[in-house]
Image (cartoon, rainbow, N blue to C red; front, side, top):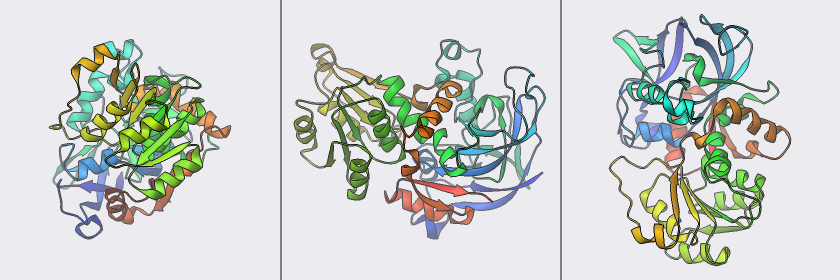
Length: 380
């Protein structure tokens, strides 16, 4: 079938993106779904820093690539082995679904250990720009077009592995549902799965984009107190206050001292979401003795982190990473959706802009400037 998708042909294009237009709306051929694959009509797709880092070259990916990985849509076609009651999946035409950006093969060692975010075949396929079963389903007149994280969701239709797909409550609006595929999965998951924040523990969130604010509302839902929000954008700090932050601190030279003062010596948990080694070092410095610093950010592969090595032992500190919120998507996306439906996770407050597909470059320029929180491309 013929689809329209946003294709990146060259990374590192100069800004402003609304003028240089690194993403072009192109007509592509989409193969039908193969075994254990689904055809999805995309309804909404969020703009994320993981997309931006591909556009600006911080996260090298093969090109040409059809971008987009934070996606909600409707099942409109079933490959062999994906029908309800058939195999492990059980989908039906009309199901509302969210996609996870790491497909889980279910049989590698990490998957068997309950850590599907670290799926080895899934990571390898994502690195090659392929689907889990191998190969690419998108083509232009010159040949194959690479997939982005197994999804390529800035397109009106996609073929994805059923291992990338989670069925959700159909009452959730499409533009909100998309956020559960990355921002909520990563941010809330980092709090409840990786950091394992308990009621009454203190949390400081460094960086208030979509993932950072999702971590903040996750900390509120977990019963953390106090909760400190740190950013350089005043509008985001104001939103953090409205969402439950007890302290909102404009990042500067004395941010470590301010965070420590707000948490009586440092938070039990520092959560870094910016993707900056400098910010991660700051979050680590601010976290209290015996505390845990968790990072979900993706800095440039060449970036290095320097911390006092002795602090890990002498202060019993923990520094850990969290990818995909250390989530099991089939378990966590439905329960996070249920918390949203119960009013415990105000995910709708993270959505600041709705875009047409032809406004996507404007959206990425806005994201590069640090404006807004989560922007979503809405498909008719």
